[in-house]
Length: 368
Ligand SMILES: O=C(O)C(=O)C[C@]1(C(=O)O)C=C[C@@H](O)C=C1
Image 1 (spheres, rainbow, N blue to C red):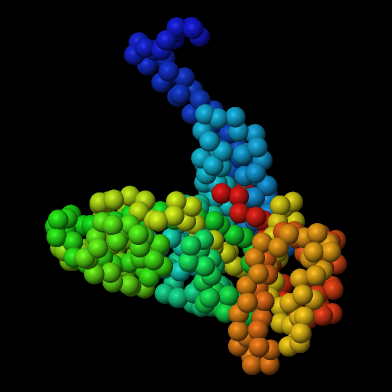
Image 2: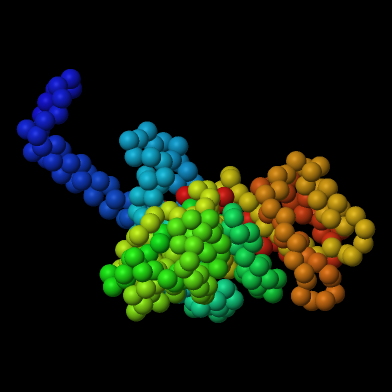
């Protein structure tokens, strides 16, 4: 191979490939050793508790954060963490394969979020509605569920918050996904004759300006999901769909235009729901739902302890209560874990002031 100062030429190719082969052998050996360690961890877990939970979100967040902090390039931190995410996913599948229910059908952004969080080795099960995802996990048919909760342009997903009010499940993680929309067609579509564009209503709204500029006369048809839009156009030669990469791949569609969302920072936050409480990971969030008594100053009374204990609120959402006794409930997300002394003190104070308080979960801030 060339010395350090000489430019690399095609003559170096065989030596470079030989070096890659040697490195791959080392990586292979190390990954196998790591997988062996994970198997031993599983043994320790089952020895101490036959009902042990194998998936440990706080540990996974710590592993990924550490890798990102150690990474010196040339791969960027996210790319490197994504590779380790897959290694961990395979290691966890060796311990016990994880079943994850998500808001389907196949090809939705929620499926993409599930894969981003659990990796490719998880078994993912599409559900037709958000409450079905909850039910599947509550019934034990899936270990975890993934549901959308808020979008940076279109706001809150009300059905997720409403379903939480009656559910017994905990939040054990969050995933934030950059949402990129594409205009997709099938191989049979006459691209110059597009007269109808299908998508989920939120996606149509997120691409409104682009559609006004490029397809002002096409009919915009709202459907139940982007994946459904992608499926529909397979049989219509004059129609296009707005959907993401996952749907494009699943339905073998071609991209006429990429990243057509009006706001480049368009992102959606998803929650991971399950049965278990998650221990502290050192960078956590907590979600609670609170019903206050119907009296003046109730919201102030609720928020004041957070201010006094210097706890950052990341979201406050009001929803009509469905029990009829209390008019409104507040969904609050804040930084910190319920086992942090400061957070525990705030929760204790709120319990005294509120008609009802439910901690939905403390979980690691999304890493990827
Ligand atoms: O540390 C553990 O508890 C493990 O089971 C190992 C491991 C890993 O591969 O690093 C695998 C699955 C868990 O979700 C967390 C981490």
